Length: 402
Image (cartoon, rainbow, N blue to C red; front, top):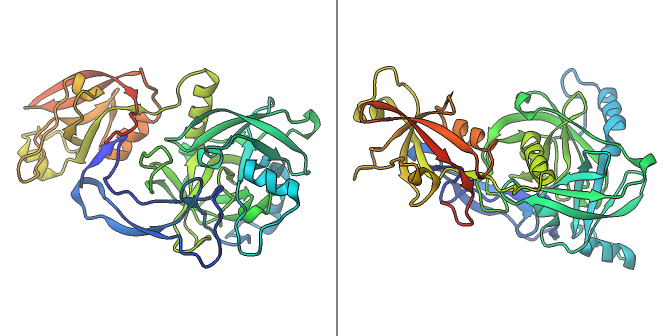
């Protein structure tokens, strides 16, 4: 099965979003889907639950406890340091319920609940797109109970990131410190704070289980790539909440879990904070937060593929262009994608982009994720024994990009 660069497999897994939709205990919400692997490897079957706007999304992880050399006191101190920057996010449904004095029955996840975190002294808040998708009214609640209206100032459904702004009283404003998600490594401490099942400012802890994961699709229909995997328990209502490292820096935004049930089973995912920072910068600049699109389907270059394409012995890695989307950015630049009748790659081989070597699909997509529509890139390819440099003008991700 082929993989698209800034595109995806035909049948990606559906994540459980931890956001607004109510789940009633005992109602089956799992969906079995096939996750296609890169380059024709057979896909794996996964079970996922969404706790967002349209299927919901849940999060997963371990119970709060000392993890290895990390003492309870360390996590308690971290919580005191950062919890003030975390807000509960409520949409119109939750606001109406609160004003009526009604509380959901036991076993029901509150509708309209999510989480966010303050990132600037002007009251700017980051959360998940699926938490506020379709909402005509949004309020945020601070740790001391202060509740204020918030406005959606920008969003990116493709990354599942939204930017809010609220008039938070100066004396009650706590700003989160944003870290560098590129530096996150498996085994590091991961602490999540959120509003699971409507229980605001709940803290759970675990470790980073993996980085660079691909799991499911975003609300914009794009494969969710480059995710941070954690076993810190996250559940419905955690969506949009921060994932902290041991230094109290936000390194991710919790977004989904894999689970056959409505709650955490120890496998959760977070959007890397560097991606959220990119969306924030674009929104502040008044630019589109849509991801940049190259418009190709690719597969890895194996020794057999290299021999078939008659690549020089010095070329030991790269990405074979299996298909170039007609009239897409790559096609307009003259890049060629092709396969033979038996599925063997027969098109160009990409070995670098802007001088940075690419050996895996993740290398290419990670680089493109840092670009914006309208940016120009130089793609280095091998074609018929010749090394060529091809300039490509990236465009915005189309609504139905393959």
